[in-house]
Length: 200
Image (cartoon, rainbow, N blue to C red; front, side, top):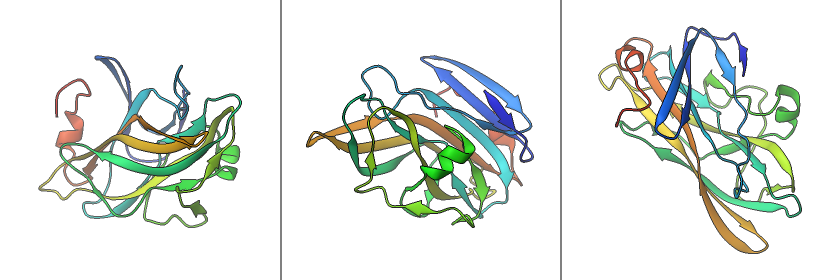
């Protein structure tokens, strides 16, 4: 895992089955979403706990990446919807795609939790109709605008994404588990105590 120094504090979560590992770092990390056997889009479980932004501000979340594990056939994306967790996060707009140029420059699985939306200089495209070539590990980064919870709310979650696509004219759905746990800078207690293995 590569780590890039960026902000006050972000915890990287690496979750496997029912066992979890929480790594506390003073950084923003870079995680690759590797295609899993039987999965075209990709799989695996990971995430971040972030408490670096003011309550009520808008941030851009971009941990989820999109690839195509099929070695011979391209896929066409239909939709990507965040799976809102408990407590919920306010998603301020549809998921968009950054890449493939961004992925080429920053590397596979570059994740961002950046202030504002849209990010200056970040060219985004719509999900629907995007083609992902065969045998590509990471082609796009999924980015969504979210609102940092209020001080009273204390925390909000995105538990991954539901991805709808076509392959050879047939529709398929894949669900990912790329988790964002977001707390306001003014009230970090729930993020400090967050355990990825506990029920929400």
